[in-house]
Image (tube, rainbow, N blue to C red):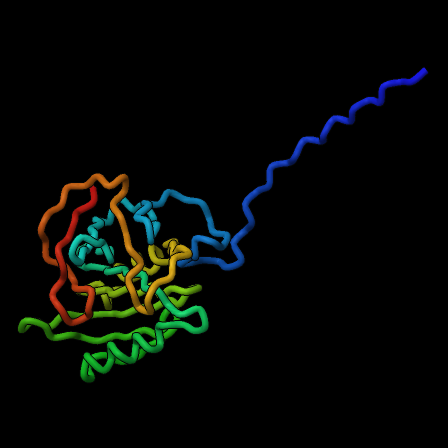
Length: 213
């Protein structure tokens, strides 16, 4: 007499918790473990939600390439650029910015490493400026704080904490060196308005701005 073998029941698979971040703060790469929080998904960048900040997208033609964050009469421009796999981009970018500034900027150490501080003259006006660069895997996150908050730590500190929770989504597509990582409006639904803002080049007038609300 043969007995039917009892089928073994598969053991339930335990849900795996997300891996813990290996660093205390960002900016983060989308492919590395990072804290889950309320962020605004703009495609190439995921930005922390802060009700005190007004966000605008900067466009060149029909492509969104940077974000302008407005807080207490001070602006923070954030732009993610494609970088080589073999080396960082901030050192080269910093050198180019200083050459264009013609002595108006100097290097200082900041929370992300070497920064550029100074006052820039444009259209007959002098405006304080602070440049921050963070190298990631195949990307550079470039931040430009412009206005009185560039040297007011109560404002600049808020921007620094904001940058520490930014997530950069580089993607796998091949991109030219220094090409802007493209952005998109959340759900592609936002009214576009003309406005004046800091340019994508540190010394050129800004492109059109699409306001996000």
